[in-house]
Amino acid sequence: MNDNLIVKIIRLLPDKPYLSLKFYKEFGRIPNWTNPQTFSEKLQWLKLYDRKPKYTMMVDKFAVKDYVASKIGSEYVIPTLGVWDRPEDIEWGKLPKQFVLKTTHGGGNEGVVICRDKTTFDKEGAIDKLNKSLHSDLYVLHREWPYKNVPKRVIAEEFIKPRPDTKDLADFKFFCFDGKVKGLFVATERQNPNEEVKFDFFDEDYNYLPFRQGHNHAAVVPPKPQNFELMKIAAEKLSKGIPHVRVDLYDLGNTILFGELTFFHFSGLVKFEPEEWDYKFGEWLKLPTV
Image 1 (tube, rainbow, N blue to C red):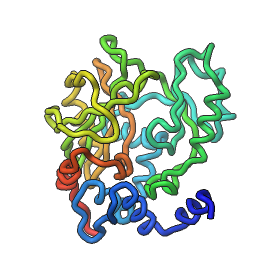
Image 2 (cartoon, rainbow, N blue to C red; image 1 turned 45 degrees about the horizontal axis):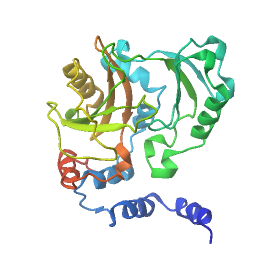
Image 3 (cartoon, rainbow, N blue to C red; image 1 turned 180 degrees about the horizontal axis):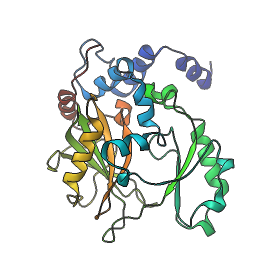
C-alpha cells in the first residue's frame, strides 16, 4: 500500500480517531478526551465539542470584517479592495501599486501574497499560489471545524506599511480566554525573505515568558508596543464569551489594525518547550459544558 493511499484512508476517519492519531504522532500519546489538562489537549477537545455557527464567520477573512467593525470600530479594519471567487478573476487594473492578496479560508501565510511594486509583480506566480491555497482545507487536514464551510474566495487588501522607526510589521497575537488576555506572542521577521519568522512570548503585562514553541526567539526582545493597552482592550472585546480564541493585531504607532482570529493556535499540534507551559496555558482554558 503506497503512502498516498494511506493518507487518503486516514483522512476518511471520523474526527475523534483522526485527531487521536494526529496528536499521537506529535506527542507520543493519545489525548485525554475525558479530562484534558494541557492546552494542546483542550484545543483538540474544542475541535470536537465547541462548534458554534458564528465561528465560521469569525475565521472568514472577508466576513469577519463586519463583526470586527461592530465590536471595536471600522477604523481598525484593513480596507478591502476587492473580492473574487477565483484568482483568474482578479481585476488587476483596479488595484493600486501596492496591495495584499489573501484567500478567505486560509491559515497563516499559506494563502497570502504581498505586492510591493505592481510593475514587477509576478501575477502568474500569485495566481498559482492562491489556487493552491484554494484547494487546501484546514478542516480536512486538522479537523478545525470553523473552516469547514467558509466560502473559498480571494480578497485584496490595502498594503500596510510598518511604523517609520521599524523595518518589520510586527504581528501581536493575543491569547484570550473568555474575554480576558492571558498572554501573547510577537511574530517578527515575517517580511524578511532571508530570515525565519521569530516568536517571543509574553504575559498579559508584557513580561517575557521563558519558553519556545515552533520558532526561535528574536535576537533582540521586541519592545512593548506603544498601543499595547489599546490592543488588549480590542482583543478582549473581540473574544468576549468565547472559551478561547487568539486575536491577531498590528501596531502602527499612531493606531492599530485587526489581523485575524484563530481558534486553534498551531492546531494544538506543536510542542511547548519546556512542556510545563502547555499545562499552564491549559489552566487558563476553561472548557464549556457539552
